[in-house]
Length: 417
Image 1 (cartoon, helix red, strand yellow):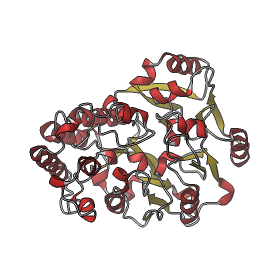
Image 2 (cartoon, rainbow, N blue to C red):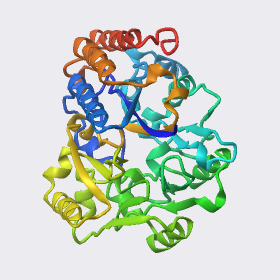
Image 3 (tube, one colour):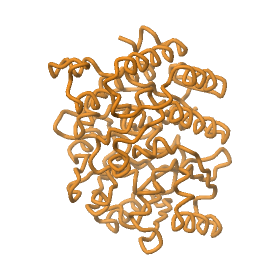
């Protein structure tokens, strides 16, 4: 039984606003602000509960050990004496954005009939470049069954940012799909994070059918406007591609290729004249979870900022009223993640698989989410001012909090070394 499972990254206890990602406008705008790790993590739990209530399948990925002492040691540094920028890079809670954890190709798309996962190398940003070893350890634990093939990172310097630059369309989750890899070449003053060679390497190692694999360039204007990942301007699910008019460098060619590979596709394009790139990016309209609900209809799980942005909400409500492909709008509060540049889609990695083949410690129901929430309420810091990231008491508390979560999930000895 193959179903889509959303694996959400639990927001870690070190969640703070250090503004480490050039091109991520929300993160740089809020640099130096006081964060609220406890509230952020509980907002993530509430989103997962809302997904379960919709009848969706839900999993989790765990916060990484922070600070990353091993990474600092490779630089000849120890946390207490590292310069502030190195402390911030070692303390980042960015693994919470699980869309950057890996690229996933479900079994119906691959030549060997296994679900392939390639951990993202994230080499473009120093604070993310040291995530992949622990992410890989989690993926190899959660997906140890022979039904999966878990790959290490693409070699540097070919930057790979995972599922945030990858889309899959299929008539059903368990049917063969069309996989779309979106890469960047230029982005004005900002880096293009997904290298075309990285996308091509992943398609080869995942044993994808070249006739059903597309490589598409993200538009320079989208990257320059703050769409640092494709999922800030486009998202796909089932038969539906939902994209901004200015998302792709050559949209006409892409749309023709997609229709040729999958005649059933429904392309929902939001015109720039109705929703500007600026409004789309500020509201994270496209960084929403486009999902197939149990009744078969397509739903969109949106951040509250989308409802608060007049042009965005006007377009969405008109689309639903006009019987467009997206039939249901669900709004969630993830404002703490949004303030650091990550919406509902950033927080999750979707995997099409049989739940029986997955380590059950990484799958959740409402009761398990309640146990996780209790750990968060007891141990996560209420607030972090970036000026206090050198405080040894804060660091000790962050490390104790993660240990408490691993104990609650029976993962001590697996992810704590």
